[in-house]
Image (cartoon, rainbow, N blue to C red):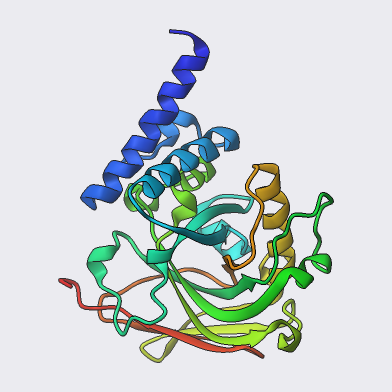
Length: 270
């Protein structure tokens, strides 16, 4: 077997491991055993295979998510750079009264700013925190429900990238038009669990600003041949530490200048 075929076989095995874990709802061993912990090219190749399988099964891509933007989250997971994943239509739980626990395996919640794009970001030069704003139509207070197919969240950068950036579900709350958004580097966030504060942060904790995070995504997505398009939802990354979900819990996040967002989870058996 040639080196190239060995590499491809390892990537295929990694994708199948993650897809099997998702299908069976049984977390798997880390895929770094197959692709390494820091080979970002290999990890995104696995992610692409996982996403392609999802699309083939009828899931509809609707946006992107940025992960690992907060120093607190990077410290929690032992990584040192952001990543991105793909959002699907069935991940949006904004209108659900209750999110069923059996949709997830090891869920955690984090509060952030989400965007809906009003135009394609198809410029040939690098976007920055200023230029990227003209492509955005709306901003939201959002809660991302992250999840991992890797047992015990035992992940490196390679594991989480391959696992579609540890995507799960998301909830969009209060929204503002682009012209009404506050200074996103200066916003504050507080998230509570059943009324008790469990996470706090500020906009500058998200790669210096959610705008800077969006610019990073626009540039990185273009480099990978998949530029951001009008209508896509972008979750810009955590403003504070992730919090493990407790069955029956209600999580409410308030983002200053934008508003609030809330999600309630069913009991353990639902």
